[in-house]
Length: 166
Image 1: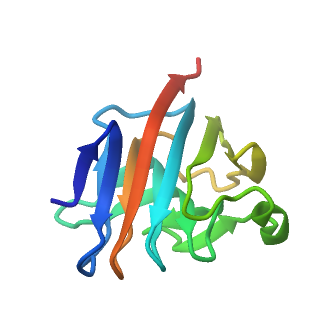
Image 2: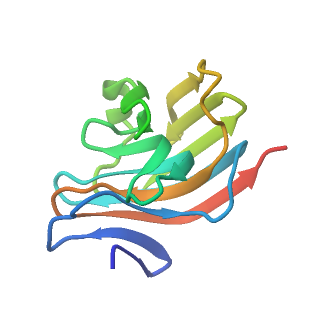
C-alpha cells in the first residue's frame, strides 16, 4: 500500500523499504483555475515529493504529465514540468526560503492557478510567480499528491482545501 490515511493525514511512501517508482494519488475531477491549500511534512533523509497541477495520467504507465509544485531535496517550492519538458520552470531564492521552511515539521503550501499564471507559497513566502508562455500547454487537468521513487521516506499531507475560481 503506497498511500494510506492515519489520523486525518494522507501518507505516501514507507520508511522501511526503497520506493520503487513515483506514485500519485489523484483527484477524479479536473481543475483549471483554482486555489489549493494544504499542509505537508516530509519524513526521511532524501525524501522527494510534490503536488501535481493541471496534470494527466500517462496511459499504461505509473507517471503523470503536468506541472508539479515540488517538495524536498533541492526542489523545495519549485515548479517542475513532470514528464513533459522534464525541467524546473521556476524556483525560489533558497536562502530566503530556508528562513521559513521547517524541515521535518508541518509546513503550509498555497497554490494559485489562474489562466496561464501559477503562483506558489510555502509558509506565506512566495516561491514561484510563473506565467506559461507556451500556448500549446494545457491549462487544466487533475491534481495529485506524489511520493517520489527512491530511498525510504514519507510525504504526509493534511488539511487539504481546494477552491475553484470562476
